[in-house]
Amino acid sequence: MLEDKNQERTSLEQLGEFGLIDHLTRHFTLKQQSTVKGIGDDAAVLDFKGKKTVLTTDLLIEGVHFDLSYMPLKHLGYKAVMVNLSDVYAMNATPTQLTVSIAVSNRFPLEALEELYAGIQLACTTYGVDLVGGDTTSSQTGMLISVTALGVALKENIVYRSAAKPNDLLVVSGDLGGAYMGLQVLEREKEVFKVNPGNQPDLEPYSYIVERQLKPEARKDVIELLKQLEVRPTSMIDISDGLSSEILHLCKHSEVGCNLFEDKIPLDPTVISACEEFKIDSTLVALSGGEDYELLFTIDQGDFPKIKGNPNLTVIGHMTEANESAHLVTRDGSKIPLTAQGWNSFQTK
Ligand code: ADP
Ligand code: MG
Image (tube, rainbow, N blue to C red; front, side, top):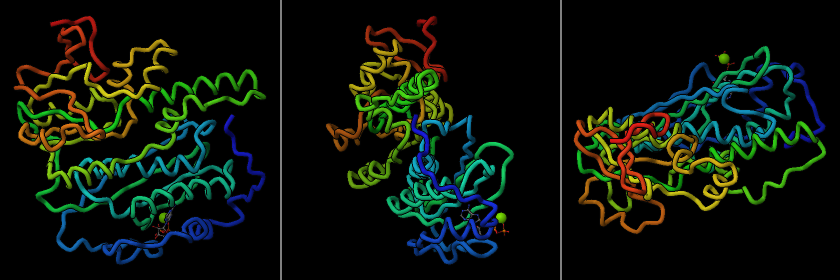
């Protein structure tokens, strides 16, 4: 369907490991003052001049986390970086350096890895982070990518999951469920393609949700917006697994409960129409879909006037005492306990 039409195939054996590393990383330039030494020695050398460092890592495995039949390699490289930057922003920190480790089988030619690194480089340039190292090895079958991101923050600016208080407002950036519905569309087109390989899919009506799946952006802009508005979240997390699972993390670590209002959950019109087409409940998709990489955070009620009416931010609920636990308040006003899978529709309270 979206397979690589590139005819050039340079085998990785021709280059050797060191030639490959040099080739893939030759266009990366260093921008961060804190990078003393990047690629090329036994280890990178960094100097953060007394600031706190945050560090996060993610491992992506072909067939588990991505499917190359519809995920272009350039997008994969970009997304592998985004999922890590999103975690750094969720600490209210600024990402500065990355390492990228890959394992590839000889099924992949050099041109495929060039595409992957073009995506990684685009992400580095767009977000101003330096690639400072990695590792390259072979795999028996598929591709593995592990990205580690470092970031910096002043100690007092770091936002943990653990400091939400009862009555704090629960806020989310952007809209939810798009990445999951984009995946449904891509999976459906893959099945159609298997039956009829001549059929080129028309993804145009689904461009927003397909892009949410294939080319997510980490919400650097939201972190900058909050700084500008002088709002410091009391707790924060990024939405990688779905809204309900992330809310439960905030509740658990902060020892609070939560009321989430179904009618407040922000959904793009294309998500709603795709949900109708696939006969899936849009609230369930927002709660359990995942991979939206939006930021979910709590703020003191006194900060509400500062964010009120901002199109990037939606208040979707408020925190409660721990003994009230976490609930979804549905459109008809009933209260249903939130579970990591979404909500348990059989238990009404
Ligand atoms: P070592 O033998 O010490 O592990 P390598 O030969 O693997 O060193 O790596 C040489 C340099 O290239 C190091 O700076 C390493 O961090 C970097 N590097 C290796 N693989 C990658 C990669 N896939 N992407 C970016 N940098 C890499
Ligand atoms: Mg190595």
